[in-house]
Length: 146
Image (cartoon, rainbow, N blue to C red; front, side, top):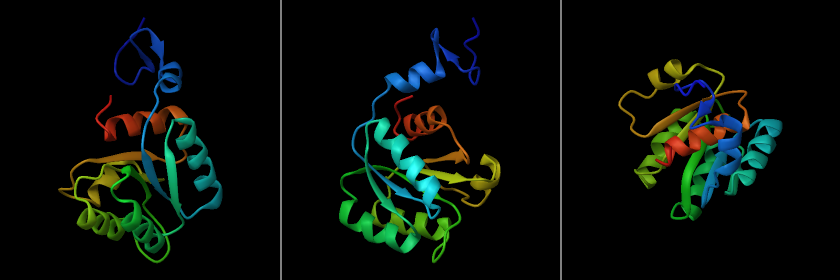
């Protein structure tokens, strides 16, 4: 049995079994301007055990985060949105709460995403479209629970 990283099998369990067994706690701020993607991501986050605060653009995300910053355990942030870019939102979120774990979701590859955030600490990436297991893996990594 292969248990190498990325093989989909860890400790004898499939990635899907591990994702289903893991339960998150707390609130995640979901920032996504595409309705269908936001609805799917919200369903997945709830399935994983989180309370979700959703925003459709960067300005709304900052308003929601200012109110709920203490309860948020992570942010799932779309990179490309109207009104503010993901980079601007990330910087503003970090001004409010520098320690917040952030997962950037984009159609770009991980290296291209990270190239846009030089020196940024604690950023995970998640390529769109993503599956439930990929979201859970990103959350576990962001929250230090992997």
